[in-house]
Structure formats: C-alpha cells, structure tokens
Image 1 (cartoon, rainbow, N blue to C red):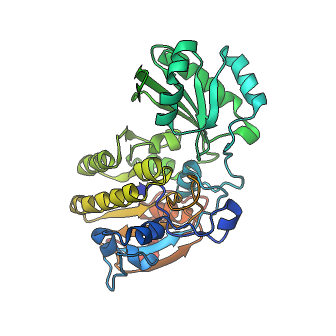
Image 2 (image 1 turned 60 degrees about the horizontal axis):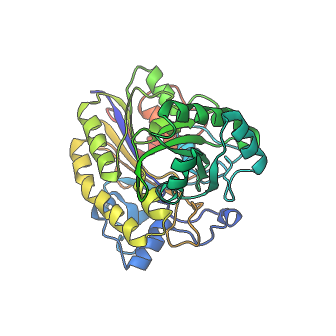
Length: 393
C-alpha cells in the first residue's frame, strides 16, 4: 500500500512567543494559550488526545499521560511572520530576509509609477480588511473606475475592482504589472486580484480571486514529491502560496469546514503522496479581527471534525497538524505574532507519545515528509522520522 502524508495547517494557531518576539513587538503573544485563558478554557478533546496539551499549558486542554500522537513545537528560522514565509519554510525554503510588509501603505513613488504603468489612478493604499474596504470605497470606485489598492499584515499587494467596471482580464493585467514592478525591497510574497460585484451597501467578493505569487527561490517539498511520481493534492490557498510548484491536484475552499470536507474528499481518492490543506478562517476572520470567542469556537469546530479525519486514515498514512505563524487576538493591534507553531503527528503504524521537542526550523517537517515518502532530501531541515517509527520495518 502506498504511503500518504496529510498536512493540515491551522492558519495562525501559534503556541507561544519565540525568543526573538521582542524584535517584532510580540512579547506575551500566545495565540492558543491566551484565547483559552481569556475564554476560561477550550474544549478540544481530540487535539488533547493527540497531545496538544503536552506541548504547552493550555487552559481546558490538560497534558495527556498517554497521547495517541507525537508532539512538539517548531521555531521559525526565517525572518518574518507571514503566511508565505511559514509555508515556504515547511517546504524547505529558509528566508534570510523577511518578505516586506507595508503597515503604512506602499511608498508614494511606487504608487505614482504604478498609476503611470496601468494608465489609471488608484485609491486606498492602506492596511485594510478586504470585505470592509470594498463597502467603504466601492461606490467611489464604481463612479471613478479607480482600482482599490490595499495590503494587510501579510506581505501582499491587493487590487480590488468591480467586475462590471474593470473586467477580469483587465484586472489580471494590472495585477501582473504590479507583480513585475514589485522587486527588491518591495518584493511582496503575493499580488492578489480581488474582484467583486454588487451594489453600494451590498458589495461582495466573487470567487474569481487570483494570486500572483512570488516564486520560491529553489526546489520545494511539493516538487520532490511530484518528481517521484506521487500525487500532490492541495486545498485552499496552498497552491497559490507555492506558485503552483509541484501541485498535481488542487481545489479552492470556502471556510474552514469546507476545507475539512475537501481534505476528506482527497483522502477518499488520493492513492499516494501529499494532501495539504490551509484552514484560513482562524487568521482571516478571527485573529486579525481580535475575535477571541469566534477563534475559540472555530478551534472547537475543527476539533469536532477530527474523528472523521482519523477514520479516513489508512494504515500507512501520516497526519500532521501544525500552523504557519501566530495571530493572537488578545494581543494589541491586529498583526500576526512571532510564535512557535504546534506539531502533532499521528499515524496508525507510527510510534505514540514521542516528545519531538522544540524543532529549530519548520523545515524539519518537510525533511520528515521526504524521508517518509522516500523522495530526494530537502536542502534544509532535519527529519524526525526515526524518532516516531518506521512503517513496515
């Protein structure tokens, strides 16, 4: 029987500040722990069974004396605390320079040059929620035809436009121009086309979003797996984060529960290789909006779905639950937070209850996957596979 690895990235579910958190203004950040403490406890029985409470103290999630899974936490060796950096490091890319973010918007000189290049003036150029900014500026955009430019806590340049005002091909053209122009210290991880429709007071984003991602600087985990002739199936924004590299099957998703559904569908049909999903709601809907109760409920909803994932596991499968950074909703501001990420690893034929400790880089996960799937080894990372067992002897 062929081996499979299922990686579920709980976007922004950090597990405590890293030693360099002060450099990022993130002292005291602890996404899981602070939510649990302020809430008076989290109810996560299935994650608790795997060993989540054995990693760090979490109110309502006690340490398990005999966890089913193997547990630890991973430090981010790359500089930065954004989605692209975290996912890239899991796949073997360690960045020595953080991808830039723009908490005060993009430089005026760049915006001036961009407007000349696309033949239009823009509006916005601020940090904003994508759903909020189209309600606030959408009417003026419809009247003037000026695209709405904005960014977020991530390394992104986003362009929103009404599909009946700026048709999709034109929106894609002006986004490609931005991708080509954003170089050197302005080289963001992603340029994102954000089309919308509707009337003033009721604008809504469509499913025609497209990410123009920065290409990883060298070969990544997904490519090693594909080159071995195995499947690489991705759910949500994973394909865009990796600029499509190594992906053989991909589906978009709407929300955490749909992402779980799509992951289960892949688990029903994928014969081998990697299934990788990103559950973005934790970050997008709750972390950035400082919604402690919403975040807590989303964690509990995910926990309730875990038995379905367990039931779909084949004897030689490996399940990994982790995160890409923190976004502590109790922390001042609405930015990501520089935190360790949890590492839970379970498989029917893997060892149980192994403390994997503090991994020095997210790339240890990718290195473990390459060893488990018997592909060429990554450039970075140290595999922990020998610590958790060798299926089939």
